[in-house]
Amino acid sequence: MKIQQPALARPPGPKLGFLGGFRTFRRDALGFLLQTARRYGDVAWFRVGPYDLYLLSQPDHVRDVLVAGHHMVVKSRILQEARKILGDGLLTSEGETHKRNRRLLQPVFHHERTEAYGQVMAEYAARAAERWRDGQEVDLHAELMALTLAIVGKSLFGTDVEEADAHQVAESLGTMLGLYDRFFLPFAQYLERLPLPANRRFWRAKDSLDEVVFGLIRDRRSEGDRGDLLSMLLAARDGDEGYGGAMSDQQVRDEATTIFLAGHETTAIALTWAFYLLSQSPEVEERLRRELDEVLGDRIPAPADLQQLPYTRRVFSESLRLYPPAWTMGRTLIADLPVGGYAVPAGATALLSQYVIHHDPRWYPDPWRFDPDRWEPSAVAARPKYSFFPFGAGPRMCIGEDFAWMEGMLVLASIARRWRFRLVPGQRIGLSPRITLRPKYGMRMRVEQRR
Ligand code: HEM
Image (cartoon, rainbow, N blue to C red; front, side, top):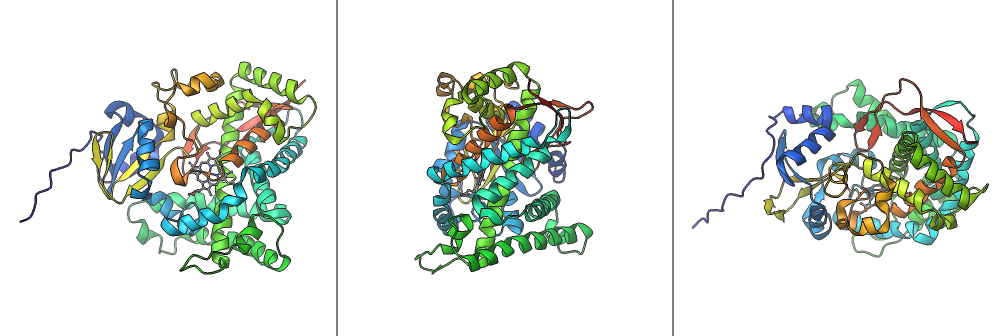
């Protein structure tokens, strides 16, 4: 006899229509997610085209899905589509392949090694800041993208990432990410096979990126071990059955491209927003400057100084809260998962939005205010654990978190001790929530030397 399954209760949520959901997301994804959470509660359901989405907005839900439920979910379609750019690297792989990749890459991100990268970070930041002149106008977002790419290139790939190569990588990744949105259009799988100009630009950018990365791999194979990320990937051996021996050039390419992308864009964005927030808050700017003057004097900062810079850390934390570079994470369920009193069904996508949870007045009163004092240890201890998760959570949590904190604080300190920034007249501020939370109109700033 066939047993009738009880119907699962559906949480409340907005009705968007088949195409309406795509439009809503493209027009104002952040506003829509915020409003949905506020209006329908901590578990809300809606449809975008054929996709069933559950917006989960309690810190405990982050734990339920990303930590306790991690074996019942896979990355959502957005990240699976990123395979077209990143192949089977750490960010996009699943299951056993991911486990193996993570094991291979972990030593590169050990704390002691990250300390060594710190020297590169501070030096490069100081050098970039040397080039500015008092009163000059710069696109700070573009400047910081170039800086963080150079830091990742130098610290993880050794000396041979020439400026021209770094530029080519940045440009190709930028082109591909710019065109990436169309993978989410309805019928994308048909559109992407057509010889449209946008498709041709995408594949040309990919070829150009591959040329640089495969070039680096070729050079390194002939030069031997230099103790950097690329050498480690090439030397990696894995006795696991089914893999046998070394990684292929394609596997090394996928990991290297993943690190290039994941390792520079997010940090550059976090820093851009941090300097924007400082420019709007002279009081915080002044407290930061006092700390930097007291601790550093005329020196450029070193990793060992970071312990002495608690306010710098709070400024960076508060920026990551207000403008989390990874603003939403999606997971597709492979089995039903109980969350917040509902059963989120297999096949549906759970959305956990840093942007929504980080702006929730239950955890952050007056949530839009830039207030680094929220990061006093006693205030942090009073909040639920996953009310702040800019680096994700669970076994897929950012492998570069230590790297990012060190880089964020060292670059912030190196630059802020010498310069402050003011928006140029007419500069608009907007958010472009793509894979990361970019400033929509760039960030043109006037550079002012500290007296
Ligand atoms: C402020 C800077 C950064 C932020 C906000 C950030 C955020 C994140 C988040 C939220 C994830 C999890 C994605 C998911 O589970 O779907 C992630 C994963 C990852 N991040 Fe970062 N990240 C930052 C910097 C970095 C840096 C500097 C590197 C490398 C140098 C890096 C490399 C990676 C990699 C390889 C993964 C995939 C980890 C895995 O799946 O095992 N990230 N990052």
